[in-house]
Image 1: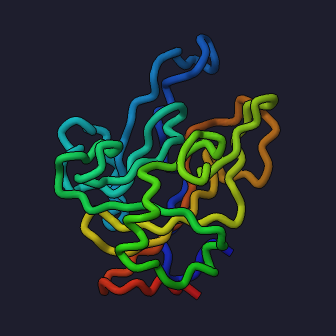
Image 2: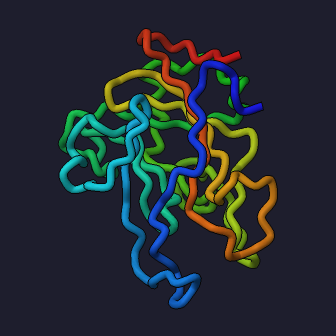
Image 3: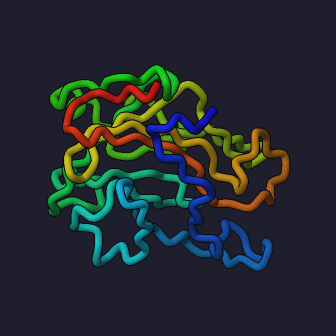
Length: 201
C-alpha cells in the first residue's frame, strides 16, 4: 500500500512530453528533453530552471533522457545545477524498502555517501545505484525494487524518497515500448522537526 498517512504520493508528474529519442513517434520531436525542478514541500514543478537553479526553491531536478536522471540541489557540489547557490541537498541510496527506512544517517555519513544524482542503474556512479534498470533489448525502464533514497532537502531537512514509475498510470508491468512517458510516480516523507526520524509506519 502506497498511502501510509504520513508520506506524500505524487502521481503522474509530467516530464517533457514533447521530446523523443527518435523522429516521428506519437507526434514527438527528436530533441533534448527539457529539465525541470521539483520542490517537495510545496509540490511545485519549476520549468524555469535557469532562473531557479541557484535558489533554495527546489529539492530535486529531473534531467537527461526522458528526464530520468534525478539531481539534488547542492550549492557546494559542482555536479549539481544548484552549484554556487544556498541548497544543502544530499542523496544516498540504501538497500531497504521504503517502510524499512526509519532513520537517516547523520550528516557526516550523508556527505560521505552523497551520490549527487541517480538514474539508470548501469550508469557509472558510486556503487552503481540508480533508481531504475533499463533493458537495452526492450527499451523499457523498470524501477529497482527494495531501494530507497535518503535525502537532505535544499533547506536541510532529512527525507526519504521512493521512485515508483516513469510510465503513465504507474503500471505494474510495461510491455509496450510506446507506453506514455515520462510521467513520474513517487512518494516521499520529509521530517519537518529537523530530526533524523523517517519512520512512516
